[in-house]
Image: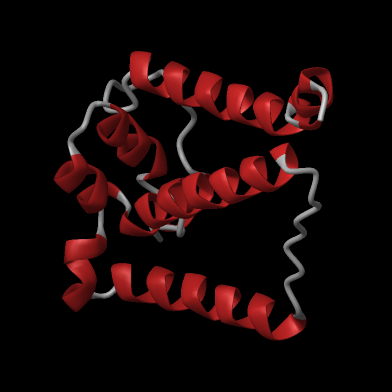
Length: 135
């Protein structure tokens, strides 16, 4: 196997990693806890309801700085997403380096489960007993 072939197969995973790393680097250097750097969630602004993404930037900022408890407190679902992305990217990059195609085929059942998880997370974090899930 030619080294150039492996590099070519890793081009897309490397580009995705570079894009995600650049986004995390920006969030790591521009603190979302300081007002005025990022737009306010429109759902929160107009209804007072926290969406599943609310606190995600604060979570990413804390995660980058190694403050994992703070990251979980800002948005636990986002932290789970960061970890799942990292694991999925590793599997993808290894498969690409070996010349195998890996696809994530989510069926309708998977999509319903993900949707239900997001809905439950959103509802619980907006109820009084779910205050521990609020950023």
